[in-house]
Each structure stands twice: as C-alpha cells, then as structure tokens.
Length: 466
Image (tube, rainbow, N blue to C red):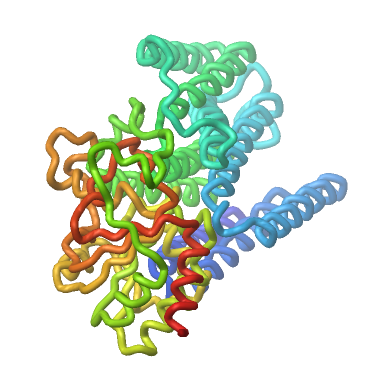
C-alpha cells in the first residue's frame, strides 16, 4: 500500500470520526454516530496493518491482542449497569493513558521500527513528542484510577488536602519540564522513566483534592488528557489517524470541560486546585434543628400530580443509584394518560459524568422530545403545577441563586422552587456533593418524600392506579 493512499484512508477515517462526534451530539442520531466511529476505527486499523506489513508472527500477535481486547470490551459493555457508566469511562481513560506510556517506551527501545532513528540517535523532534506524550499519558493513567476509585465509592468523595499540595505540584511540574528537556538532549533512558514516575505522582496529586461536586468536570478533563496523550504518541509514530483522533478527543474533551465549568460557575483552574464538594454526614428526617420540613407520602404525591396540568421531572444521581428510571417512565406514562403534560429537565452537571441523566432516561425509552436542557426549560417552572425532583440536590439549591455567601453562588440551577409545588424524593436531609445544605427543603411549597427513589416512584404508580 502506498503512503499516499494510506494518507487518504486515514483522512477518510478522520472524517468519519468527525461525523461520529456530530451524530453523538443528539440522541436521535447517536446510533448512527456510533456506527460512523466504528467504521472509521476499522478503516484506520486495517490501513495501519497493511501499511506496516507485519510478519506472520507479528500479525498473529496483533490479531490475538485485538481479539482479547475486543472480547473484554464486549463482556464489560454487556455486564456493566448504566449506573456504573461514570466509573467505566474513568477506567477506560486510564487504559488510554497506559497505552500511551507503553507505546512511547516501545518507540524508545525500538526506534528503527517506526523510522525515528536508532537507539542512541533518535531524532530530537521525536524525543520531544515522545516525552510529552508519555507525560500526559502517565498523568491520565493515575488520575483516571483515582477518579474511578472516587466514583465507585472505593475512596472517599471528600477532597483530600495534602499539606503544601500546591507547592508540591508546582515542584513536580517544574521537575517534569526539566526532565523533558534533559531527555530531549541526552536521550537518557533513566530520565524517560523519571518523567513517567513524576507524571504518575502528579496524576494522583491533581485528582485526590478534587471533591465529588466537581466529578463531572474531572471526567471530561481526563477525557481531554487521554486524547492529547494519543495525539502526542501519534506524532511519534507518524500516524495521521492517531493524530486526528487524539486531537478530536482532546479538543472536544476540553470544550466539554469548559461547558461543565460554566454549568457550575467554576473556573477550570479552581477545579484543578480542588477542595470543593465531598461527602457529609446524613441528616435524618427528624434531625431538623430549628427548621421544619413538610413531609408527604406517595398518596399525596400521586394526588397532586394527577390533578396537575403540567409536571416537570428533574432527575439526579439519586435516581441513578436507585435505578428508578424505568419506574419513573411508567409514572410519567400514567400521568400522560390522565391528561397531564410531562417534561424532563436536565442540568448539565446532574449525575457523575456529562450526559449521565440523558443516558439513563434513554435506557428507559423516555421520548427524546420530552427531555429538555436547563436553558430551554428553566423559564417554564413558574408556570408549572408540580416540579418532581428525584435524587437531584445541588443543581436545585436556591442558595446558588439567592445567597451570595454560598460556595455555589452563581451556579446556574433548575428553578424548581418557582413551581406551585415541589415534590422532592430523598433518603434524608443530607447535603449533596457540594457538602452544603439545600434551602429548598425548607420552603413552604416543598414536600419531602423520604424514601428510596425507586420504591417511592413505584408506590406513586400504585396510587395512580387506584
């Protein structure tokens, strides 16, 4: 296969990747987008194999590796519950980072195989590309592992603040830059592995102090890192498809991180500095201090919604944990049969990853036309009879709008408190990931429904049937 024809096929795969991203931007075209991405990746893999012309033994190993990886991915995809999707994404990001480290090491020890020189005489440009790719890859690897542990509950969601952490991070960053320069000049294998070690440590230290409230940003940020790591290694391997794919992932992840930060009124720097959001001790329904809440039952909720003209449902991570999306869809169908207008309102940072709520609602076959983003539906709450909040917390907290002293002040929220009645399903009065109390609980038009989200919705459905 000629290099010109290979470049053309790589360009075709790049176009298909762009079409994949465009398709994934809307639920109705997401399946088509996935198909474009799969076809583009297949073209890129086959083109790379034909261009390299591996020996029979090498080809067997490559095919075996693809088979093992593909089988593992298929098994995980079938078995993983939708509620664990954030953890899965973080785990996959770590694998991309590790792959970047392994490829860079292979290029260092066998540069002749990819035409970047010989051992001891690797091209200077390739050394720079290699060192940057391995640094980003190592940071992505350990950072994604910490994110996985936090998302999966195997590590506390609280920010873990190390003494003088900023000074330590700056020192590690300066050290890594010095090592990259030294490696580019000397091609020292020792410096290469020191870059890896420093980057691995930096990945841990960057993510550990980030609290649960910032997890959506972390997921998209690590997605961006994995893309740039792939692009860096793509330059080392002189592989156009890898460069295009990495750049697409890196830039789209960066844009998504910006959108997430905007949705939380946070700057990217403040997220990296960490320290916002975590776990808090739960408060029971009777632990109210000097404030009281109005507590209701499934029968009360069913009556209010059955006699409403319009109901807006606001899902959150509590719905995901309880796996209540299917029961919620059944409840919405019952209300529609009663002539009630039902819509869903999605906050951009609801859940533990971008688009988490959209994925769960799609799994329950909620009609796409019923689902609206914050900016498209927020003005409708004032004309809504019932706002039904299921497991969301910080994204509905009026303190973000009304209390200038609140840590989340300025964060756009769903104005559920402006509805005539707000029904709020929650296990307790405990705070959300931001670690602050939700003033919505104590408003006169709020009725708290203390229960597991799935059980409460199922009880509401039973009451609607009576």
